[in-house]
Length: 64
Image (cartoon, rainbow, N blue to C red):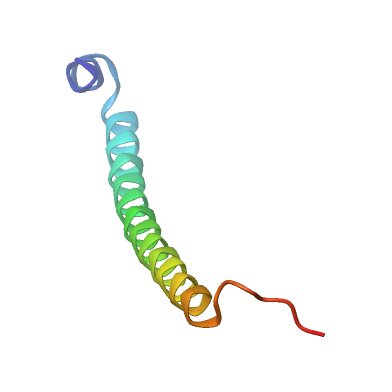
């Protein structure tokens, strides 16, 4: 529906601008999704690592 409105009611220069900006935003969104996936993997790794260190130390992290 939006594409139809863009194609039929916007002047050519506006249509090109909207389409160019849309492509840029799609690329930016994909890059952010990729970065988000990487960070989630990093967080999962930290959880696994911290869980192992707690099991190895018996869960006591006090240092005196």
